[in-house]
Length: 59
Image (cartoon, rainbow, N blue to C red; front, side):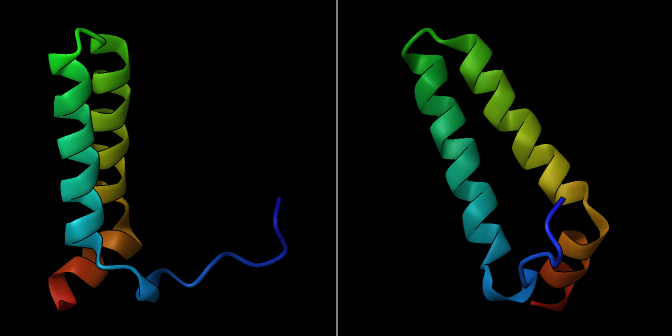
């Protein structure tokens, strides 16, 4: 486990999540549903993560 976590404030979380969902859609169109589902689940988990949700609400 890392000694310190990266600073989450430096990310534009809406852009990060939009990019993940966009990439998931691209993989879905390439007939790779497993990858698409994994990316969408990652985006959903990040969006629900309390520090990320707080930063998005403050933006």
